[in-house]
Amino acid sequence: MGFSAVNTGNNLLFLVVSGLLAFMSVTGYAGMRNIKGLTPEVIPPAEIFAETAAPFRLRIHNNKRHVTSFLLRLECPGGQGVTFPLIGRKASAEGAIALTFPDRGHAAIDRITISSPFPVNFFTRYWTFTSDSRFVVFPRLLAGMTVGDNGETKRQGSSIRQDRGLDGELERIAAYSGSEPLRMIHWKLSARGEDLLVKEFGRQATPPLVIDLDSLPGQNLEQRISCAAWLVRRWVSLRPVGLKCGKRVIPAETGRRHGMKLLTELALYGRD
Image (cartoon, rainbow, N blue to C red; front, side, top):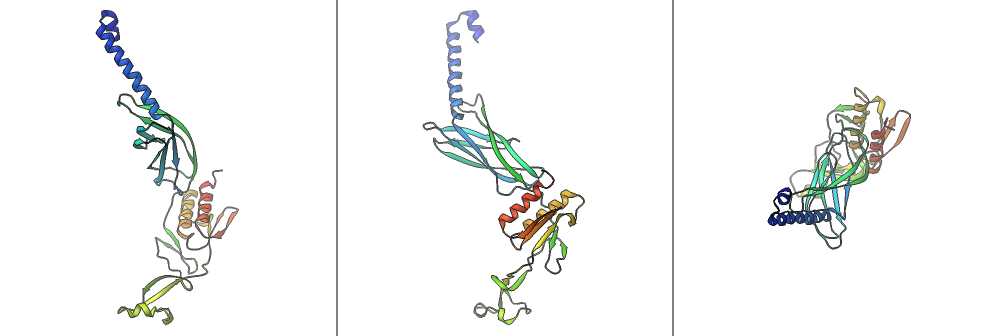
């Protein structure tokens, strides 16, 4: 159209071309201002296991004092992202995506892209930010081995917790099976119904479980590590769990923090 206006000297064409160029300039400025002044953030979950989708949170902050941003899309490497219709000035928004990592060890999300077709959906403008979100991917969980209390027997499949005792905390009220001592019967609750009910207590002192990586079943090291990770996650909240990886021995403890320490050790084993 511009060449036509020059060749023909038609003033109307000059006006149309000038209007279109002005429209492109104004919308381009509005589009770039729409994605400026934004700060993206990726928040990983507490536990990330290899080959398992993990819920990540994508958060975006609008740092502009007077301007609202519209039609924003926040993307991580791999094409997954979240769309936000609008984010007010000095406001934040958050969405969730599921990311899967194929292998254990250190991982990172090194960039986040903000894009928007605002204001007329004629051009899509992008702005890429560097990210320092680093985390550890735990080994893939391989279920199938449960450690019991009788001589540390090993059974295939899942099992219900059987470590009941007489000296721990009250865990639940169950039906009387005939094998419980009479002093375990909850007489007040039993009097309200037709069946006898008994009190079930946990054990105050549960024997520790030390997982020896070299002695676990598996065709290769990765399968043994996956089996060890499953055992840690299964038992660390119920009893003290320790870990032996080659010459390194981690003493048995219990609790979520200790479980994260053991899983991190397994995730980085042989990768340093």
